Every structure is written in structure tokens, then in C-alpha cells.
Image (cartoon, rainbow, N blue to C red; front, side):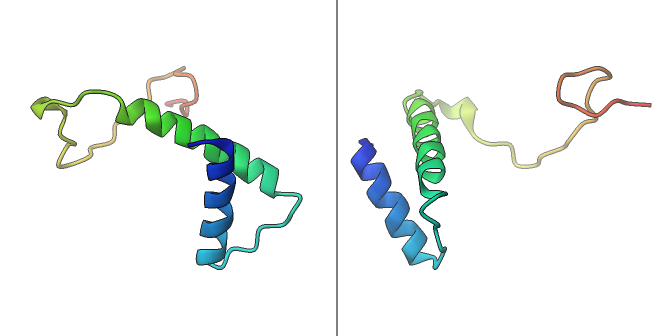
Length: 74
């Protein structure tokens, strides 16, 4: 998406869902939407095969002790 398309999309979606978007907040929303759109393009550009189906059941596991960003196990 071009920067102009991203701005148009953000404005249209905010209006469509009734989300008041304060003028001071709009540049940040546009920036992070552009970031997310770029990441989506990367993911959508990857070839997927039969083994890439999502898991039917998500089973969370406890984070490893000392893992970055995870809670410490006790």
C-alpha cells in the first residue's frame, strides 16, 4: 500500500467503526498501520505448502526460566 492509500484506509476504517481518531493520534495510528501492512506483505509473500496448515489445537507451554520477555519460573 502507498502512504496515501494507508492514510485513506485508516480514515475510512475509523469512520466505519465509529472510532474517534484525534488529530494528534492520527500520525501514530497511520505509522503503526503502515508497519503492520508491511509485515503482512512479508508474510503473504511466503510460499505455503500442505505442511503449513495451522494447528487445530493450541497448547501453551510455560516459558523457559530466564527466557527473554517471558515470566520467570519459580
